Length: 275
Image (cartoon, rainbow, N blue to C red; front, side, top):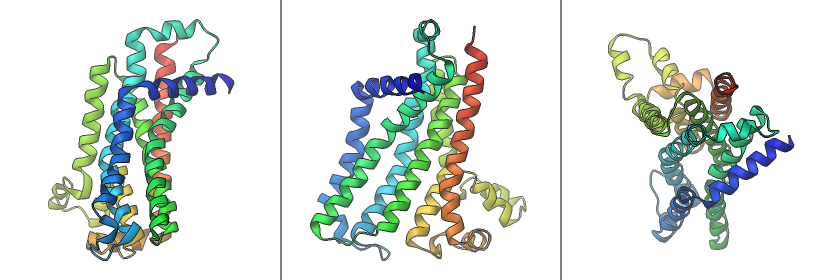
């Protein structure tokens, strides 16, 4: 445990000194500032107003930006250390592979989630100063959704990083994963399956294996309990899950998926890099 925490601390220190972390932090912090300056909390769109309106916009943008940043920066972690010859140096120290891998995973999670959390906390603090009503239940669920989304793509990123033999290949593979998940968002490519005569339940089940779709639908459910914006697909989701059941699924599934990929990545990492 001591070596794991030390590895996490080293990874955090390296990330805080890097340029990508500065850009990453400015993006999320700048988003919240820009939305407040633009008067978004005073606008009303589809019944959403105040902090709820800001959260809707912030979560939609985060859904597109956060996974890509997490994947691109994470996949270069193991692959970059392999190219730099850090493994040989690491194996000469009294640090186990498990401590290094999971410590790096923990440190990277704290680094990628901290700017998102601070931006969300800043939005809540600004709303309190302005006297805007704060939907605490929605804020709590959104925080859980962001934790689940960050952990999910962090696990996927570590898995891809252990497979790739170079940083360039790892970066390309990460972008391909993000693009495929984005294409399957909102059943864009699943229309082909519908044309082939698949039942709607099967098509929606396939769509809900996409963590981006799970995140987006869970965020929509907090503001639209009937999921009117999803159309007929809402009946299938609510009949099988229910409102509370789907909110639990939107948190548990991405965490479980990210943990599975992280574990698979560790198994491959241990098998491939032990002398």
